Image (cartoon, rainbow, N blue to C red; front, side, top):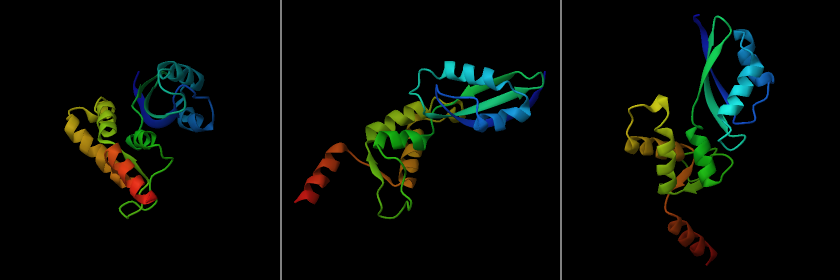
Length: 156
């Protein structure tokens, strides 16, 4: 039993269906799509349904497979925390897509530092990475009190 190939997929948590998006990736590998979907949905039932999760699937020569489910992307977690649907179309300018608190940055970093891809990275370094991702999306990091003060100034 040898490894045929590994592929990266983005699959919605707990609601995966055997369809074209999954079929195009798994079909050429000879992986049983229904078995993957069932096992994936079972493993991701703890997540909120529909969150896109990165999955690394390894197909074997005997048509079996293994897969690793990773945490949601940093940008997705930032969008959820800042309650925006998309980042800025022109990051780096004065266009602000939204705001996020330092506490939310810390919570996102705690989630991301557990991923195997981030093994060995310190929590402080991961916080800086999350802040960088937020900035590239046009999301400003600041305390909630600051947001309320600015809104009051705009109203006056």
